[in-house]
Length: 188
Image 1 (cartoon, rainbow, N blue to C red):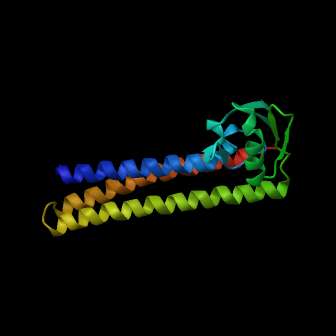
Image 2 (image 1 turned 180 degrees about the vertical axis):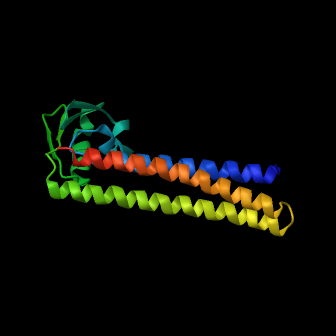
Image 3 (image 1 turned 90 degrees about the vertical axis):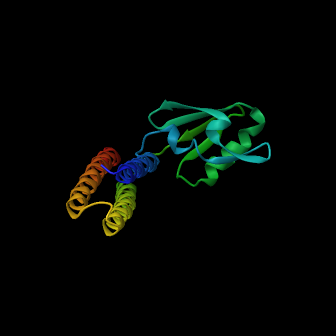
């Protein structure tokens, strides 16, 4: 196989993998009624004059199914962390006792669960669009190679099938991940 073809296929698969991982990370941020440190760990807070994610300024511990406990490494940052969580407008209640911050996640209503389900489906569709764009770009490279007589018509047809098969595998994994997340969201 042509070296340029191999490079293009590797880059294509790498791009699909990155997109899939990005999709999974975004899916993790959708609330399911349970406390999950990922929901707040990347909220930026004022930390000695710079914006830093909470997970770089404090420990985040799951106390129970609906509560996170945030323990700042420096008590002088407690107010900034609390303000940052409140400003994220996540529908959580935030309280502190001067040493730690408690983030309470209320039970999700049926309506809210349906909204989160729509969010998950929207993320899935956006991810699939990005993956299809990678497929198009890869196929364009192969069509150019065919035009320049670097590969034959048969090789192009074979590569198109391989590219589609790879895409199908990633979209199937994304579909399964989304279905699992929706089942989690709708679980009462």
